[in-house]
Image (cartoon, rainbow, N blue to C red; front, side):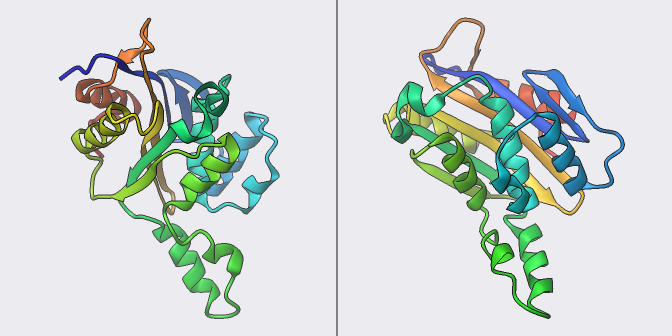
Amino acid sequence: MTISGTYITAHTSITAQSIHKDGVLLYRDDKSAGTSDFLLNAYKYLEIDYPKFYKMDCLCQLGFLAAEVLLQGRQIANEYGPAKVGIAFSNANSSLNADLHYFESVKNIPSPAQFVYTLPNIVIGEISIRHRCKGENAVFVSDRFDAPFMHFYVQDMLERNRVDACICGWVECLGDNYKAVIWLVEKDTGGEALAFNIDHIHQIYELANGEING
């Protein structure tokens, strides 16, 4: 069902060594040696100046880069006010990638730097600091991306005026399996933007992955 007044104004995907925005290929790296290598190469290619990136775990780096591309050219907190910009993500493995690295570190000397990232909502924290988003936020863990639930949750926040814009989608990273498909939902922004509905969420997923869920 189409809900008038809420729109997907931009969408970004990072998967299979590629970065797309609104369906257009921005970057591809066929030579990277793994997830960390690809994310670092993408960071350098995008010419982002944010030294803290090097300290982040892969899940945070993935979400951070996706948000950078999604919000390119926007000052979202200035446009709406920090408290009116929310973030809602989901994934299948929570922060398991960081958990495994931390578990290995405790065999010798526990690493506080790795322990920081053993919660899945840290990726939201990194994006919030970077873009000054202070609105409602959450990370949901499920076996597969649940488009109807994500639509309901974000639409409810917008209809209740909890937020006026929301960064939402799927951000997953475990070993060399990674995938970010996120989009920006805003109120009353028509034009060529997509109406925020389940069908369009599915279309964005199909465009990024070749299938609705997976």
